[in-house]
Image 1 (cartoon, rainbow, N blue to C red):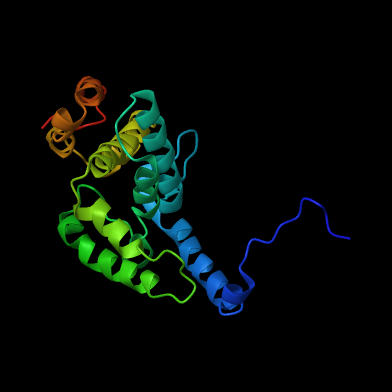
Image 2 (cartoon, rainbow, N blue to C red; image 1 turned 180 degrees about the vertical axis):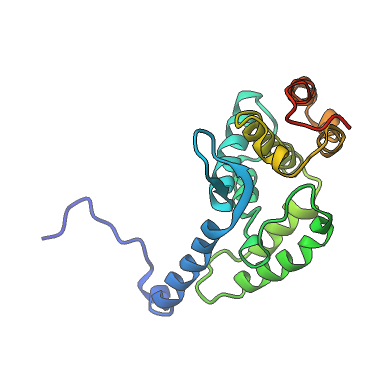
Length: 209
């Protein structure tokens, strides 16, 4: 006997035209982002975070900051931008912020997004457009996303005694340069980071150069 509160989630006519094998295949394609390791270490562990974890952290951080500072942004758009932000890495892999090859990473990532967009089981019709917005757009949501995307690995480095910075011989000027744009977008975060860069340099976690 069915429950009086039960309901059907699908339109029978539409559902009959959708192959669930295609749907589940696409979901497994998304799962591959969990296999992409980044350079940052998860706090309290000795392991690297993966890009799926970073995407979740990014979405939650953007949401929280937008609410806390009462920012005039579209929350749905902001969260979608955060969730698709690293999807291109399924095909391209992660590129370290300070790597020489970073400027070319978007080419492989864009191709990966096009592949995912074409999947028969993908129900996100504007996946490509959303990814392109976070990559090249200038909306308030994109600007906030870029600030928080810089903030999180910075925060992980501070809380792992500069482990990634030390392993890659990152300099003070590299970090300062990578975060300089935040001064105009989010001054309070920029000022906090500037103080932390001084602290990290004094601790020997960043090369003073």
